Length: 264
Figure 1 (cartoon, rainbow, N blue to C red):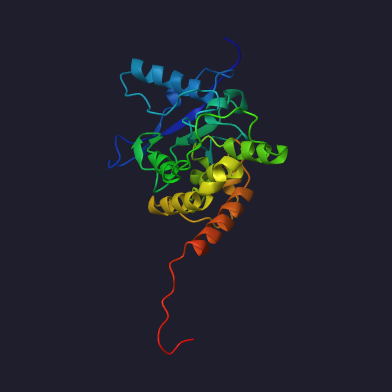
Figure 2 (tube, rainbow, N blue to C red):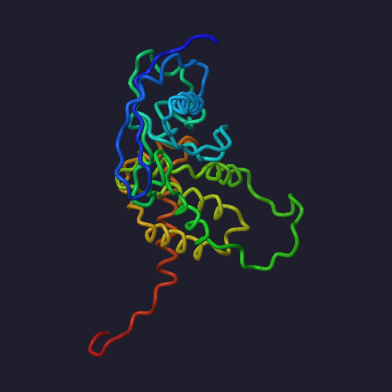
């Protein structure tokens, strides 16, 4: 079985969106945990023991378990995805914890991410922000050859940097304002950097930023905690670009100012 550790585990339990929540102590079920296990496998082990004890298992999100889908996000000891930089919860392994260490696990905390149950939150606000970006309205015909549109290497690489965002919401959980600016900026940076996205740039940035506000996310105040918590290390430079694009688009599509008598 290899090396194992015992942990002092506290997990947030909440039966539903409107039910009161609380931390429960599961130290008894967090003993002899293999250090080669991932954090999600650790929760699986605890859940198996809870089921055998007749206790309802802990509800948590997961899917690919390969750091790709962004579903696994939880706050571990006050840090989204845990203590390891550029690491999702599913990529975090128990060898990074000390024997006897105390671990507190809770869901993302944000107004726009209501708790569904235990560690699961509703992140559908992200889907609506993406939908607000719309689609390419120009008739472009069938799919062109991959090399038909020449894209400078630097532009392609920057677009790929932005496209690395997996939409996990760690930026929201880390931000004291509950802002999703890094998520929105990364998606806009991906879509708008490439030539195919240029015709829709203004409409897209106006739509997605406006939807971000409607969903109840807070504003960015340059704490940079989003960048620090991002498992894909998305740069805050994309937020600056988003702000520039939004201001320009707002001025371009601002309603005309009515002139009143006696002025000008």
